[in-house]
Image 1 (spheres, helix red, strand yellow):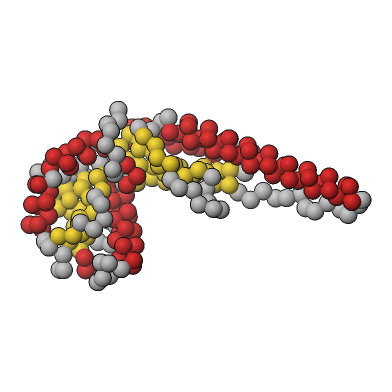
Image 2 (tube, rainbow, N blue to C red):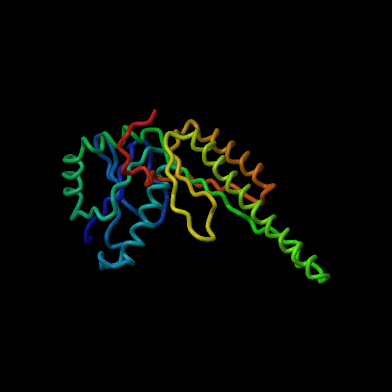
Length: 232
């Protein structure tokens, strides 16, 4: 084995889920360290391919754990020569781990996206007089502007409503032709049914604007990794 990559720590209350790629769960006194053999990754750690594969593996493995227990991800790139080195690191960072796990205890991340469906157009107006054609084209433009305003308002209202059910919310960057809303929520597990019900209600309400709500989770709380304030 060429070494171990520390992906994160978990509360130690669950078991190792079946997830690809295979990984190692190192149980300790308080937490369990989640490790990936560096043999599973490209040989050059400075390559973009290494970073992409390591990030995908970390997300898949830790999110599988997040379904049943608390997860504290670590910054990608924490490589160690072996088990003994990992244990020494965890002992040295115990206070930091305690603070992070206390802040995230009983919580997981959910991602809310608002997806805009394509609205069928009325088609080009039948050729008549020049003024009739211009009036019809102007009406179509007005309809599109009105729809865009309504969708933007609905996105704001949805973000506010679903964020109110979370401990903390973090907006993710929007991409052209992507979701109208991309929001990470740190959610207490006991509140997950309430969040799911609210997201479904928002999706039903958005159908009149050809909008649907996509809820992804539970995920490892990567969006809240560097957050320092406590949440009740």
